[in-house]
Length: 458
Image (cartoon, rainbow, N blue to C red; front, top):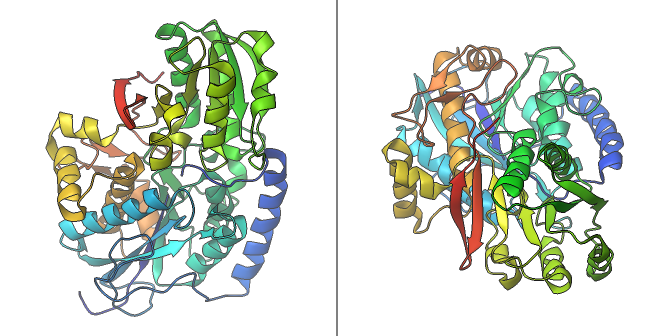
């Protein structure tokens, strides 16, 4: 590593976990952002985590490296991951850390003239078993206060990102770049709920991007697939009362109606309930032939799946079960007998399709398996690697400062196909959305999420 001052890049991941009830989340997020900004003004320099010794193992199972001294510029930069390292998403986070480290290693630890090392952050708590809003606010303050950090890729959960982005946006040295591999909530980059997305960018400057498609597209794909391929006519649409779940369920319901599907009921499920037998018994008289689970498995999803099958029958029967990517990448779901034959949409392409396509994506998946002894636990791990590649491209073009890195990220740069871990050239547009949008339909079969088909994005 070159001598000089390191910069930290924070890499986090989204898709979902332990978000608050939808209406409560807005109020809580607003309060936390206000507290976060105050804390930032006070110049807190406490760190969420410390970097482990070079070549050591992170809390999520990845390797990290250390070195350099704090400073706003220099030849040595540090990329940090900001992920839920505890709870149901821990496996996905572990392999995201592994993938991030592998990308950096394969680049020779370099982004242009800068040396790159990796540092992990945890945005979860054991008590919640997933991401925590107060921890996300603290992390955001720590990112801004730690002048060694140059950018943040985060987070795995959209609700956490909505807390962190405004704090990073008001960084006094210039808005800090954030790039996510898993946030799919549309409102972060486009008009969705009232005030979105402008309320996340108080300075008026966009400082966020993502390398994955959004839930408006994912919800539509699920509904179109249900109508065209499964030929369903009546759907019950459920959500977990969280930012992600409410958003993707709303998108599914809207697209379903346009596709000729009658939405016979919508409801939120309470993650704290011991079972959902009464909930599904209430739907029987409506004669649905489809149930859509808008949410994440972390919120008692497995019990929901069990009770759907118990009351409404197997997924191969009259009532089909469809879920978004909040249910992908969970070994416990894959092993669940009642989850077999359920359909899951994913806002990207799984590792199996990257392998089939050949090229840089297939090589990265093979290299990952060789190094870590298993396939990635979640397809989001590969997209974490892609987000890292994009951040490194921005660093290479920038001047080693937060402001310069952000400007480079929104200058139209791309990761070329022959280097891209997702097998396609990609970048982010002026809004912060990825320039390549893929969507997959997967089928749970034999305890494996099996790729069924790609779905055109419209």
